[in-house]
Length: 291
View (cartoon, rainbow, N blue to C red):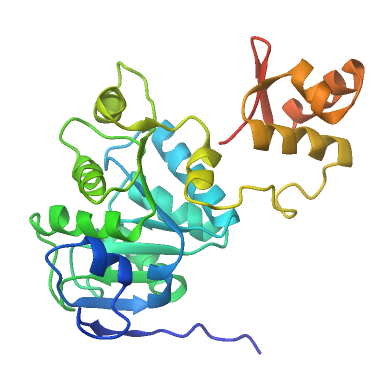
């Protein structure tokens, strides 16, 4: 018989046991928290993935890919269940069988945006819905800036994928900086309005996110290749990927030196891996195709 997922809900106050320690340490002022799902996820290693509601396909692909990679490494994905980047991040984590936390600007039983109703239900069953607002309280535009400090509090690092110059995700970046959390921004096309905010963050202070595993390593997660991710790879193919996973962008000569394979063997393996869509070879450099 299939085991039914347990649905847990309730309210926990700052002075009570079970109140998330990270929120207790970083999110001021402290308020009661209403939750639906597994509250213990709030104590696990996590990254926040947030960004613009009006995202591009590039942004959506990056958010899904990073969330999927985090899930593979056992890292919880935190976001705000808004349209666009937030939705892509939650969906990417769940699709990979990982865990995700949605911090809401409304009650846990209020579906906002309405189009995310099925996703919100799934997060309540498989992850955690968290809110400072009691059940029945609807979304209010003033709630969302307030909840951003909760998102950054829960995360070991914050990644801004896409953001315009007035994006609410920039508030999350500010909260993270005030809390002493590392902030990453995904570089984007300088002509794209969706990347104006993230590119400005990089110019001013944020770390550019060039490889997904950089942020995972920085929070202490193990970015080793999971066996289930590439089940049909041969041992030599896996050796190539493991070197790239460890060293990031490299050259064919470095690959030959690290793998002890001949130049002809490395060249052939790279061609196969590129055909499979697992790596990218450009201008003498080799890198893993993260997306």
